[in-house]
Image (cartoon, rainbow, N blue to C red; front, side, top):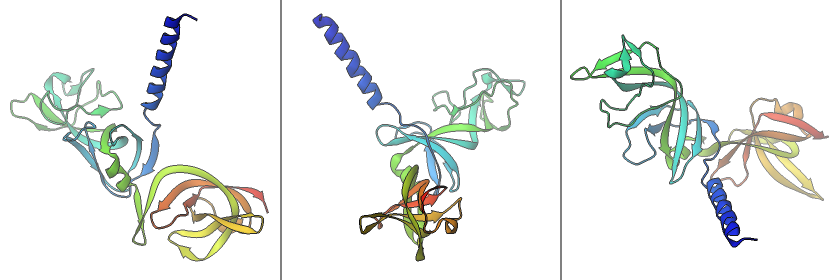
Length: 243
């Protein structure tokens, strides 16, 4: 084989592997248990876009260098140049910014506002910039550390970490003598004469009492407590294995 072709093939293979390694991770969804601040760009010192309160549903994906991209729905106040307004309506290709200057970061808005009436809140000195209120789907950025902290649920004074990882486990469902954190049941699996603890089960979308003493497949969100080495699972779907 031609050495030049071999080198070209290896180079293309290397570039393909690098693109896979650096590809963004798929979007995940979760509920915030603590407020999280979102910024216009994934760099330190970037302008603050909004602080999302606890209970807000978001989608997110991890980026490089310790940042996460967060998609959310809500209302934000932005600045728009008067050249993007025509008789009180947004023109095509309108750009919304964090501050009344063309040097400010632009908001990432998921929909087109072309032709929509502008809700003007404030006019900057000189009347060239207008502050407007937008209701839509947006994108912001936060550090991975802050996002992880905002996804930690505090139960009985202890933090349970949730990253909306849906997993499936199999075992016999047994009631606990008393609730353990939010869990009311446990999932065990017997190998020969030894019974192993698979997970603690938190009631969610199914009545766990109906499945007591059944060997089941259970799927749901995985939760971890720093002081407990066994996962917690929310019982979202249950299928019988055998009794």
